[in-house]
Length: 437
Ligand code: AMP
Ligand code: GLY
Image (cartoon, rainbow, N blue to C red):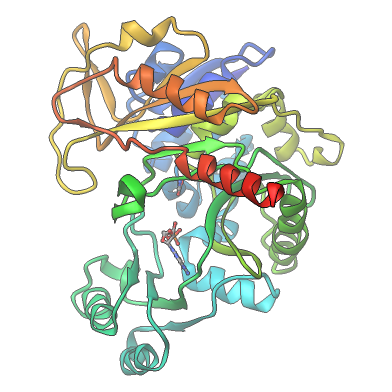
């Protein structure tokens, strides 16, 4: 079987790593990939957004299955294009991918189908003054979101009304996110613990993988700017079985039913970004793809053959699928280039990869890396993700294992958070205290 994977980050390395273990022994291609993916797949120098070139490649190489990592090609309509050419592809159609591509669409959809989410209002460019008035009426903190895709930077949590008005001006007048930010969602700030759940769906039936928790801010203790994600762990105790059942019943099922009813059945991986609040789970965002870095902790826990699972989703066979997750815990620490998420340098030689390659239960997943002669050098903001697996009841030990490996890898300006997984450890300690009382 020939598989084409699209994308070049840590998520894609995790997808390639897991698909590479499939009993179907696939031949893997990845466009454009990175140095780590290049060890297990043939790299193809085509950009993830160049749909025509990807289609030509898939036809010429008789690709049996295409798997899309990032959101851009999905919102551009790669699934529609490939399917109309008779090619199998894992992901949602352009219309269904709008659940990530337009926050106004997602919020309006959630309201229509009574899916729990933060209270909000939407404003288009001609409603600039209504937006200002709304900001003056509601309590702080206020969350302002650009409608369109803004590479994870389109959301600001504003602590004061002045800041909210400034953000509005930046988005609507100064167009810092271009057209993506001229229309906005202004919403209530939700208090609680964040978690992410992946639902793999064929448009009708779905299965969920282990719930994870991401760490989006650049600095320890969730301080500093938002990033693409600085680390994750799974399964998170914040979403226990009872909570997961509630999320399926009140969020995932009505979302899939609603999208089908709207004429856009959703196939692929639906990423449900949640806030677990005092009044139950609420949707912070939907993504139309696997999350990064959550994939780097969730897939190493998955027993099922991922290739089979994706084909079952494409071919509408998920009603018979049973997901088995390993009874283990996993954590991923992202090593980033100094300066990220702002400007950073690239081309720095990475040292120490060999030292960890043979460590049991440690997987180094590449994100922004490339091969230069015999060296592997940095080529992006998030450079590597180091995933460690450990016993199910030993999150603390697994965290230590990951950091021991992280400390062996270095490059000029390397930066990582030192508290990945701590929120899970603290949560478990709080639970134990409540149980003792
Ligand atoms: P998003 O891109 O919508 O996931 O937002 C990025 C991050 O901003 C989220 O991961 C949350 O940490 C935070 N955020 C977004 N919306 C809210 C909200 N309504 N209340 C609290 N935090 C939020
Ligand atoms: N981890 C957040 C995302 O994938 O969007």
